[in-house]
Image 1: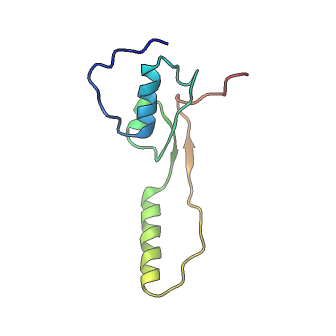
Image 2: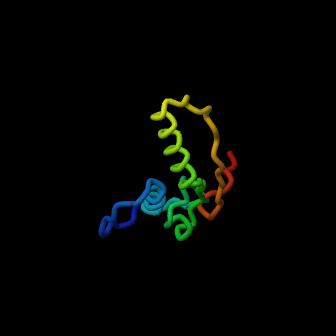
Length: 99
């Protein structure tokens, strides 16, 4: 495998961006040789074709804040609950290679 010239180094904004950049540096095909997925559906994800999990960040924040206020007011901790998520499939993932 031939590595590309590093040129000017730019730090990745997210771990998946770093994985995509490293895959390119190693001449790995995404998704052919490697699948990459992220979490939070951050703004650059769509432009990078990054498969990601979208979560309701505002609802998550409001829920956490309300739970904290309830605890500070002496109310019992709520039961754990799951918030909705959505898998956003883009071009960075594919089927596993055949063995």
